[in-house]
Amino acid sequence: MRVNNITTEDELQKAFHIRKEVFVKEQGVALSDEFDQFDQLDGQCDHILVYLNEEAVGTGRLRLVDGFGKLERICILEPFRKHGLGKVIIQALEDLAGDKGVAKVKLHGQTQAEGFYHKLGYETSSDVFMEDGIPHVLMTKKLSVRNEVE
Image (cartoon, rainbow, N blue to C red; front, side):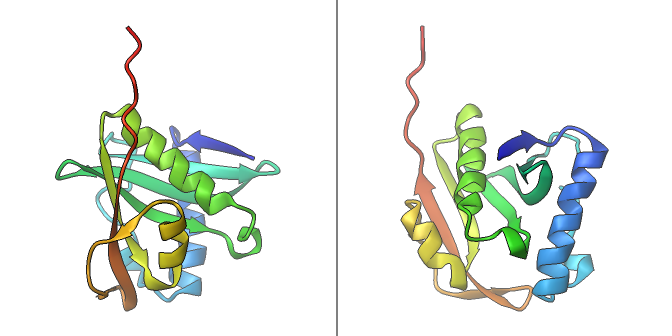
C-alpha cells in the first residue's frame, strides 16, 4: 500500500473515477454536486490517492478553510473497504495539514461513519444536517503540535 500526493492530470482522473464510483453510482450524489472549483491541480487543494497492489482504490483531499484543514471527498472503492485504508487516508490528510502549519482539522462526516471518525480522535461538533441527500455531522480534531527541529 502507498499514498501519493496527486501531481498529474492522470492521477487526478483516477481520483475522479473513484469518487464517481462511490459517491455518484453507489450513494446517488448528483454528478454536478460531486465536482467543484477545487477539483484542479492549481494549489487550492491537496489531493491524494491510496494504492493497493498498484491499483488506485481510495482518495481524499485537503483544503484550508477558516484556519482549519478541511478533509473532503474521502472514499474507498467498495471491494477495498475494511482493510484499514480509511485510516491511512485520514492520517495522510492530517499529515498534509500539519505540514502546512494547521493545528486543527474538520470534516463533514456521513453519520454512518461517525463511529469510525470518533476512533480516530474526532469529536462531533454539530447536529445532523443533510448534504447531497445524505445525513452528515461536522467533526473536528486538534492535531498534535509538531516540534520544530532547529
